[in-house]
Length: 113
Image 1: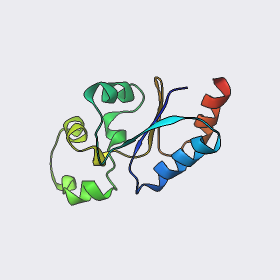
Image 2: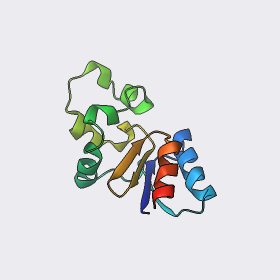
Image 3: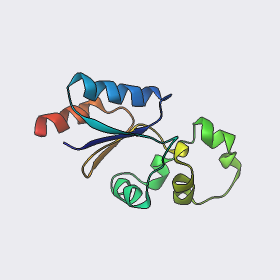
Image 4: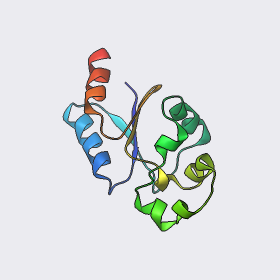
């Protein structure tokens, strides 16, 4: 398994994802989106599973702070420019990706590995 967790330290969902894998002794790579965003290649892989609009956190603090609800914009460009606009946690296992806390899917990954 090659688990990557994309999130922020303040995100409760990200904390749950980290705890889930730690409790099962599964190593993972954590990427703090407040320090480093997602590369265009990584975004392409994620877009194979989720539409670009599903990835944008329209209820999040950063979306409101930037007043994006009042603007026209390219969603993909905004996500690449400002990673704090992503819904979190994003959890990747190779080509598989989950958005939010999806413990049932993570359990399936562990069982099938």
